[in-house]
Image (cartoon, rainbow over all chains, first blue to last red; front, side, top):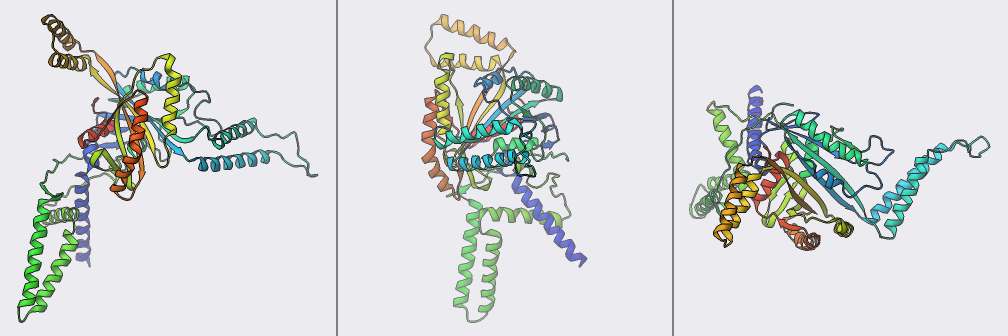
Length: 216
Length: 276
C-alpha cells in the first residue's frame, strides 16, 4: 500500500510539474513579469517595482454617488498633466453598455426598493393612520427623482446606461514614489469631488484590479 | 505570500508543417506505418493473429492516450522527461511556490490570433489598438464631447470598450533626436539646413532632462464566442464601424495585429516596460 501511495504521489508530482512547465511556456508567461508578489497595499513586480491601483468612483458609503452629478469633462486632462517624475501612472476606463430593456428592469427594481425603504420609515399608528412626524430621510426622495429622470431618459431612448470602471495604476520604485504619485492623483480626484479607494477591498486586490484592466 | 520568482525559460522554437509541428508529423507517420504493418501481419499470417491484434489495440490506445494532438504530445513528452529524471535520482522537479492559476488570473490571455484577435479565458475575444488622439481647442470641446458620446452610444450587444493611457518617461534626446535623424534621412536639405539640424541633434543628445510621454490604447471587447471563426466574423461585423467612429473624432487608429506588438503592449500595461 505504501509503495502504491508513493508511486501515486510521484505521478501526481510529475504530472503537476509537466503542467507547470507547459504553463510557463504559455503566453501569460511571456507577457507576465518574472515575479509578482501581492501585499495588501501594492503588488511587487520583479522584486523592484511597486504597483498600486486606485478605483475611482467608489463612495465611502452606499448612500452617496461616487461621481458628482455635474462632473467636469476636463478631469482626465487634469490627470494627464501630472508630471510623473520618479513614478509612472496609467488610467484605464471601461465602458460596458447595458441594454435598455435591462436598464428599465434595473430602474424598476430600484424604484420599488426605494418605495419600500420610504414606507418602512412611516410607522402607522394603532388607528391605521400614518404618523406624519416620522418622515423618511430626504435622500430617498432625491433618489426617487433621479430614478424617475433616468427611467424617462431610457424610456424615450435619449440616453443609454453603462457599467463603468475607472482604475488608476501607479508604479514606483519605492513607497515614497508611490505616495507622491498618489497624492497628485488624490488631489485632482478630490477637487473634482470624485470618491475613490486605493486599497484592497474584499476580493478586489491590487492584482485583481490589474487583471480587470487586462481582461476582455 | 511567498516569493514567486520564477526563472524565465528560453522560448521554444519548433518547425512546423502545415500548422503541425514536424516532430508530431513524424510520430503520426510512424504510427500509421506501424499500424499498416500490424494490419498486414494480421491479414497475411496464418497464426498468432491474436497477438498482432492485441499489439495493434495497445498501439492505438497508446496513441490516443499520449499522442492524439500536438498539445497532448508535448505534455506526454514533458511528463516522461520528468519521470526519467525522477528515476535517475535527479529529482530537481521545478517547484513554484506560486498558487495554481495565479498569473493566469492576472493575465487571462489565452492566445493572440491572426489579424490581432486576442483570445481570453472563458472564450472571450477582443482587439487592441494604439491611438493618437488629436488636440481639441476650447471652442470645439462641446462638439468633441457629443462625438465621443456618439462613439460610446454606438456600443451594442456584447461590445465593450476600454481606454488605457500610460505614462512613459523619455529623455529629450530620444524622441527629438529620432525625429531629426528621420528628417535628415528622408528630405532633401540645403547644407545650411543640415548644419542647423545637426546642431539641434547634438543639443538634444546633451540634454538629459526627462519628459513624460503618454501612450494611448483602446481595447474593443467583441464578446464571447465558441470558436475563433465566429470571433473573426464578429470582428468583421463590428470593428470597421467602431474604427471609423474613432477616426471621425480626429483620432489616429493603429490596430495592433502583430503578436509581438500585442505582447509588448500588454507587458507595458503590467510592468510599465518603459519605466523599468
